[in-house]
Image (cartoon, rainbow, N blue to C red):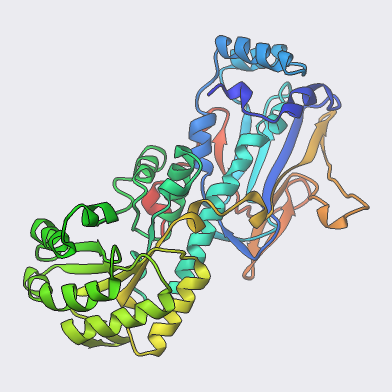
Length: 434
């Protein structure tokens, strides 16, 4: 993708709209909600700012932008290409950590007097960190719910969302964000993303699992299950078997509970039964009782835990449903460790920038050698007032306080991560996960 074509159309005219200046400063914040789990900046920096565009890119961009009806800053972009790097200082809070809203998460400052306009030009792609941060935050909220019921949370929520997103890149980015909180995923491309952009080995894991076609392609449902056991059921192995292709209760009560029970128990494997339709608040308790009657259970510290079998529910799962299910079964005396969850569209697709109201705002300009604060303050909507100055944040007495670099002496929680073409601070995935 041509770097020069990844900006909003109106930004191509902005270079001539600023007063003469020697620098610009902007920041990114989440404005609504309570807190966010920050993630994704390193991915964007590595993808967009570690390699300079070419003369051919300038030629292509000029042709498209002028035909599009806008001026093209050919001189400025050529000077920038000749410089050979993006003259920017980007500071940010630590990735993988949780911060309150309404503090700067990222600050962006130009470092060459000729390129103050660059800070505004890169807003479009840099603000897209709203997506991984929003996914990471929502996944983190799911984990907080799970932790109310069990400490065995790492594999409690499994990413089923790859087919439900709009493009491959969303699967990669969002899938990585989920893996900050949980270790289970079927979004395979997220493993590649974590390896390439965050130096991970293997960031997530999965298990052999059936789909409806691997059941319905057999003439007898029991034969499909038996084949699954023959191929994968070994000591210590976990495998998942979707069981609602026909009559779910019959599959649970008769096929798993009686006809295949001895094979399951002798194999030493754990078979995860997967209902994929119906009301989970009815079917999960039913399944627990049926399986307990046939396989037995162990009295764990937090409730009854099934022997040899577990359950995963992956249809229509969101934060509220996870809470309802775990609340219901634990009140009935069951351990929360009996049930895992698969999450699809609610995890990676049903999100937008307005969930936490992410914004990228210019807050300072350097004119005649001095920085001065700038901000918007619309009378028609005072809530949209932006922050002014070259700002950062300090952690004092359990709270984050917004500070001004030109007025205050403070310990800025935003660290330099990128400076003039170099990645100054690089995270390993394992260092930013829960």
